[in-house]
Length: 218
Image (tube, rainbow, N blue to C red; front, side, top):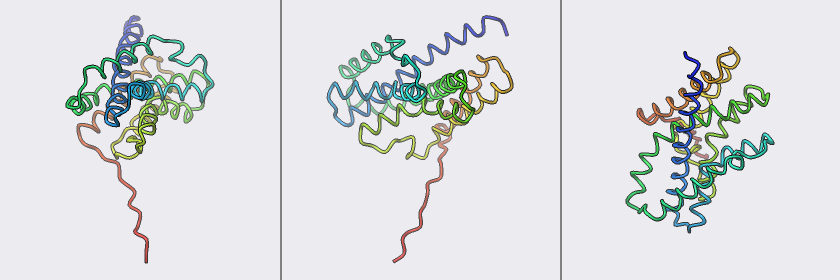
C-alpha cells in the first residue's frame, strides 16, 4: 500500500469519529427529551454520551490533559448540536432519528474501541487491560447516559451484542500489535471487526441469552 495510506486513514478516521460523536451525542439528546429534561440536562446527557467513555478511560489511566480539554472544538460542536436539536427536533422525530443513528453508532463503536485500545497499548498496558480500556472508551458513554436518566444501561440489558463486539475488536488489535502489523492496519482491523459485528447483530437481530434463574421454592 502506498505511503499515503496512513495519512488517508487518519483523515477518514477523524471524519468517522466526528460522525460517531454526533451519533452518541444525539442518543443522549433523545434520551433526555424522553425524560423531559431541561436545556441544561439535555446538554449534560448529550455530553456524557459523547465524551463519557473517553473521559473515564483518561481518568483511570491518569492521562492528562483529558482528550476534550486538548481538543475543545469537540465541546463547541457538541453544545451546538444539542442546542440545534432542542430547537428543531420534535417528538415525532425521536424514533426515526434513533433508528438512523444505529449505523454511525456502530462505526463509532469500532473506532472508539480501536483508539482506546491503542492508547492503552501505547502506555504499556497488558493486553487484557488495553482491551478493557478500549471497551470502556466505546461503551461507557452510553452507560453513563442511561444511569443519569435513571435507566438500567441498555448495553447491559437489551440482550443485543454491543460490549462483546467491542471486546472482540480490542483483541483483534492486540493480536495484530503482537504480530507487529503496522499500527494503521491494526486499527483498521479492530475498528472494522467491532463495527462489522455490531452491524451484523442489528441486521440479523442477534440476541444474547438471558439468565433464567429458577423460581424460588415455597
